[in-house]
Length: 151
Image (tube, rainbow, N blue to C red; front, top):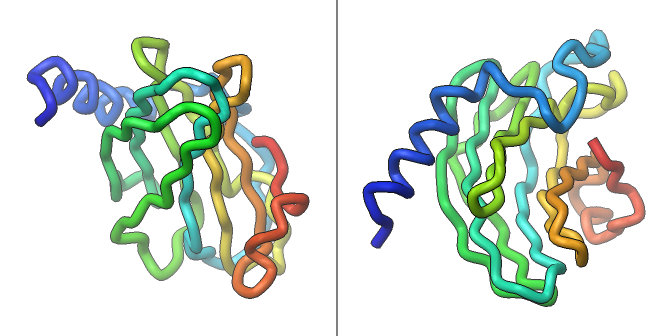
């Protein structure tokens, strides 16, 4: 069971979702493409210590997911299920690692015009730094981590 503090922090992520931009350029390059679907959202902890990650996902400015995840150290991975829309023009993720500031990534910025889906990996690296990766290799090629790029 989450404490009142965790619920307040999660509400803070949702409330400030449109006001932060620590992961990348809020005015990133938009391409003239159709809507894309969020095929997969995963979180991974490659740090040696267990970590708590609070996560919010926006589709076209509407909050579609809010959750808190306790990740085990040394490669603990979890695929996040959600009510993803069939397609949106933009997706943004807002993440908070432990008690650090909220970080935001516009994960659909910079993807090609031919893309119809996107995969997102939120990774805590071996130094404990939070990064967001995205790629358009969905379907049978989805296991090819080489196709993901840092946002």
